[in-house]
Amino acid sequence: YYDFFTPEGPFTEADLKQIKKRMDKIMKKKLPLVREEVSKEEARARIEAINEPYKLEILESIIERDPEAPITLYHVGDEWWDLCAGPHVEHTGQISPKAVDLQSVAGAYWRGDETKSMLTRIYGTAWENAAQLKAYKKALVEAKKRDHRVLGKKLDLFSIQEDAGGGLVFWHPKGSTVRRQMEDFWKDAHVEGGYELLYTPHIANLDLWKTSGHFDFYQEGMFDQMEVEGDQYQIKPMNCPFHCLVFKDSLMSYRDLPKRWAELGTVYRYERSGTLHGLMRVRGFTQDDAHIFCLPEQLTDEIVGVLDLTESILSRFGFTEYQVMLSTRPDKSVGSDDIWDAATEALKGALERKGWDYSVDEGGGAFYGPKIDMKIRDAIGRTWQCSTVQCDFNLPERFDLEYVNSDSERLRPIMVHRAIFGSIERFFGILVESTAGDMPLWLAPVQLRLLPVTDQAQEWCRDLAKRARKMGLRVEVDRGSERLAKQIRNAEQARIPIMAVVGEAEMGSDTLAVRSRKAGDLGSLPVDNVLTLLQAASEQAIEMQEVDGFEMPPPKVVEAAVEQEE
Image 1 (cartoon, rainbow, N blue to C red):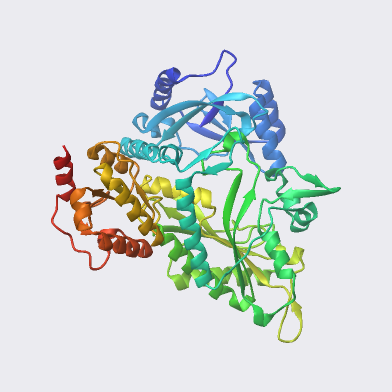
Image 2 (cartoon, rainbow, N blue to C red):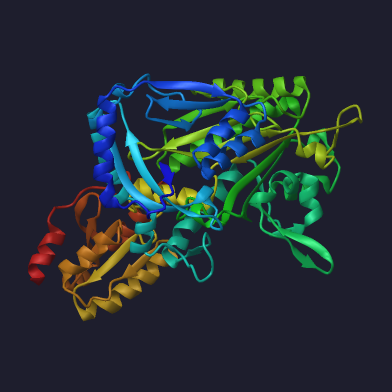
């Protein structure tokens, strides 16, 4: 995108066609794109000469970030130049007009700051050829249909209540049900994996955040402090300092390590209103945080354990394809060469033991340790950053964390930060979009909807629903106020995995006429069989018809019931 300020008024969607025509002419001219490196002073003088205050602000921010950074301009023939890092194609003729598209116009605060000017943002996309652009547009249409904000509203999963403030998520009953399934599975998997669960406060004395370094390095992402009895308190943007305090509460022996502590900890971070986006970028969210404190010689095994657990949890939600990146030591860092080398080798060794392909981002690690990042691929091929494994040599030093070794010496433990979902909110949004709201049976807020054909069937259905709930199943009864065909359609639109028709015949034979949203008519089944199959499918995270021993009865039962009603 590119942001514009025009004194005569903002661009509109109607302008895009004319702008694209001008772009096509420029491409056909085959104008050269020439890089020019200039001094800070020369760049400043040229920008001031053409009265471009926004470009001047960008220049000053580059200089402030890195006074030694090269300042480069790119010229498009003799017609135009801009402040840009590049690189670019050699000439405009290398760009195909049929592979470029201007997509939309929107208002955007300058640099995402709502206190600054509102500019006009034009979004565009460019590809190597027309076929790629066509495929991209098709993917956009599919992504729009899966937008978690639209589906969240349609399926009554969550909302963002502007009366309460932007970026704060309200979980509705159905969304809360899915979240509870996610959290329960996450907790059980961690306990089975040798983790202990923690609960820590939502606020702490500001001194804690000064000790951790967050106040110095992360202040822009933190909310303002509050005063409590003369002291400054800070709502937490991170969970890690709290886990450090728990470790420090008693002196550990090397025999006590590793310590694996996990927490679903809600944190709060200041995000500008212009950057907020549904569940993907919010101001309050729950991290699936864990921290491991271990000996140097335990690090590789611990990282392998983290990767195993990550793979196990992500695959349960249908994510089995990953892009893995190992990020190594940056120029500015804390910790000795030996500890960096050992930690980096431990991460490499863990990835090699997993047999995973990975890329290396040389110098891309945090200043306090190397890390592994994992992106998951969703159902329509998009990748999402979720899981992270990060070594930390900084916090153990800042909090003076120690353990006693076999020679009674006090040493620093290795600390590993680790998240699998990243955050519950964002992962939930990704899951909604990947499934198009069609949650797998084990996660669905309602697993079975009973469709009573008559008023007499209502009470029978309610009794059956109570029985099913005692078995841990999520069942609801349609009000029965509409014709059966409409009840089935409503259940389909609500993305309910299993529905069952109940009329006089079903009540008399203690059966259900069962229909699967994904597999269609499953026929007439004894009630006990349906409940047992649903329970087994939910426990195994598979569909009901995939349970061992399931036999498809005669077809067309549900369709026949609809025809009979009509």
